[in-house]
Structures are given as C-alpha cells and as structure tokens.
Length: 77
Image (cartoon, rainbow, N blue to C red; front, side):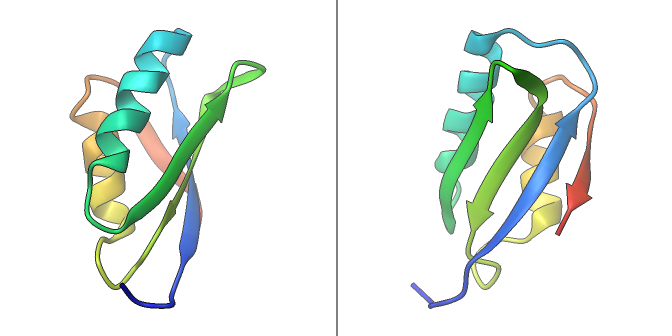
C-alpha cells in the first residue's frame, strides 16, 4: 500500500435510509484501496470516502455508488 491518501465527498441525490447507506459503504470498503467510507444520519445525502488514489480512482468510487441504484455526484476532491 502506498503512503498516499485522498478523500472525496459524494452527494447522493435520493433520500436514503441508514441501512441503504450502510450497504453502499460496505460495498465501497470492499474496493482495493478504500480505507473508510462514512455518512451520518444528520446529513444523509453526503458520504465521505478515504482512499488510496494509486489503487482506485474517484470515478470508480462514484460508479460503485451509482451501481447501487442511486444518483450521485462527486462534490470534493
């Protein structure tokens, strides 16, 4: 693993419940290079993902979220 680390905030357009966000986060955490994925019930549209950009890129993170059936976009790099 490299010493590089980045984070990105993903905005989820739909209203999602806690269980749905947990499933998305679990899927993200399974990707090589993802160290953490988190969201909070107080801001259910935002998810922060910490990752190694040498192992996975932000497009793959976004694709993983949208593959779960929601619409989303990157809002911070």
